[in-house]
Image 1 (cartoon, rainbow, N blue to C red):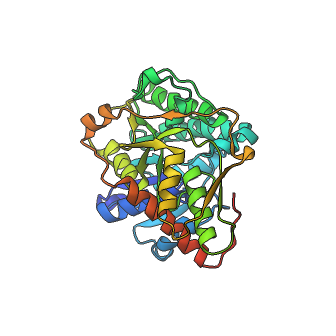
Image 2: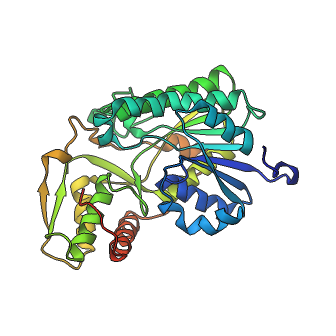
Image 3: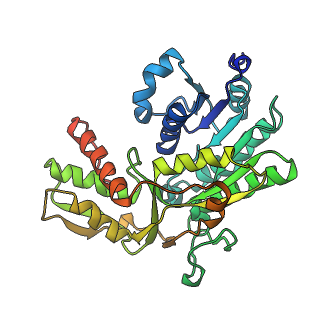
Length: 345
């Protein structure tokens, strides 16, 4: 079985991890701004919550459909690539939670390193080995950066601070290897902190927003539980991030190239939390550090230099930090008001 969209000269995109925050926003962006046909790869057990608004289109296969695959199952990847025969591949699927990686390091390493190698090898041996491929690494590869190396340029030495970060070093290097060794059109990004609606609640800003929404609904005492509030981050909006990924593969793509991408607003995690609290009508919210929310070590200086990518593509982030945070809080307010139950994690 193969796709039948090649005949009408419409480009085909494959998004691995389409049910994640970034994958779902990328699908939205491509549906709105291109005429491409989209295949989304997901696992059979993936939640469709982030793509609920697309299910009617998916059901009718109107410019988008789902394929089941797993990065750790080579045969399933062969099936996905055979059916989709993509012109563009956005590889976003991963075990993407740094804190979880301390508890499940082997799954993290297998999925992110071996899984990425599996996908690129299948593409290399496919009918279209010259597809444009985006491999999504992470700013976490830089890890423990000294202040004299801020803002972080692409050539700063990797010093990963979690099994997740180590796995993304592997992801980064594998992507660059396939671009250089096989002249495949593989480009790698190190996206710095990006967030917005649909952000998983295992990440600090989304956990805070969820807790505030639960406090507003009377489900929690007015106390937000936190981890390290001193970590310095530069924030981008996920809706800007997916535009950057589209531009990466469509504006002068260079095999083996790699770029830092990120926003322009820098603050500590504590200052970010204060911004979220300022949007709340509950004025007596307290903050408490919880030991189990702290990582053994932390990548606490995540400030990018994005000059290389901006000069290469002309990309600029458009969405203000305040809007990103407000939209994230509104996302959680709607979810909490729906009556669903959530852990306060």
